[in-house]
Image (tube, rainbow over all chains, first blue to last red):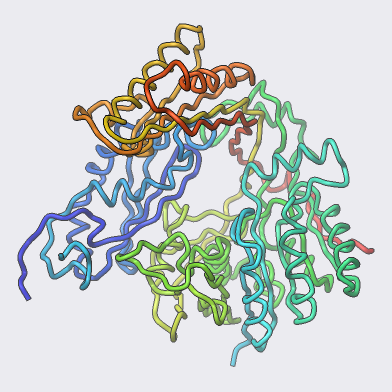
Length: 122
Length: 457
């Protein structure tokens, strides 16, 4: 197996789900493998996530690490342009936003941590 | 062998699949132990809407989905000794009980024993003026707005109390979703209020089961990356919880879907903020030490939930009138469609502003990541090249009066004859809105009003 390093969207090495409470979004990011976890831990910082959601008005990000579950929980304040009470977006709850994070945050990882059969290896 | 209780989910929200409960009941009927089926159908706004209906028609105000769900499942549940626990009671659990009694009669079933929980309606303890004057968790002011409903999230104990009356069905209004599962466990195992780790495990079980198929591959499948077989016949989850606090998440037999560490992890963190401090009226749940392990095909063992004492206050959702949301859409397709859609968007913005409408107007172009964009379309405005394809112009505005919203929709409609070439597929809506905010109230203000009772036919 080659261990070339590649830059890929987070979607190649992790999955996640978004939820909302008021104007706060929480997005879980779960590594597909133990091996991918440390790369995400070191590269997907709360600063990068805050910057990604800045255009929506995000004011603060906390990242909770759950190594037992190979997971991170990002809690993003003011990410939903008012949330379900006052947002004008098609997606008042921000349910689609897990894929904004998975698609637009990139990580530099050895190819070996991308799951076998992943379209990102083609 | 420690005693094991089996709790299946029949619905994770009010619009869920009506028939999902049937394979769950069938699977439960083959399990040796107490069996329960929960339906979680009560979103924050749903209860406010139910409250409004009850004000006009006092015998209604229970979930409008009650008939749809229970007409399909009531017979099978009753014949197989599956007790139903649900928040189908919404704003009127007693009315819901009456309706289930009628439904049983219509289905030629013996009269079911039905228990209800009341006391979540905070307006029984406080005036709406006093409620409106309280500070909200979100910092939103609700003072001066018409308060439609104020309901406190009750815990699991009153559901356990209802089950102790010997009923087949428990109908509640606002409790925590997890309480629908923890209530039966407290009833079956006699867990005490200080058994924090056991209550934490029961709460986590409830958190995993309350969204139905979201833990069995629903809202999870990402073809080519996270594949799930049989999504058209998604099997809903069944929790197996033992007296000693062991917990396995499984699913209905002969169905699609999967239960894996990945599906369970996504649901553990769903709508969770600080994973060490998930507050409920029963216990403060800490999932940071949770581990997952395979326990056979489509079976995941969940261990390590920790509990601490619950908070001294109870969360209450206050719902107030929220005016109107008006939305309208028009689609453009083919060569240069993006430029035509952008021109349509500019025309609408210019005309609405000139008309003197002051409320914020959002104009999306669906097809260029509109949901990832902001109200000011910063991402879209950064696109400079012409694009061919399909682009749907969509407007949204919130107004106090219905007429202003309808006017904005009419501006989109007028693009048919007066806008750029080739617009089509117009559609629109103006819908009444309910705003919600959360307040914290002392337990002793609510708990004296809470009780479980049986509704006799």
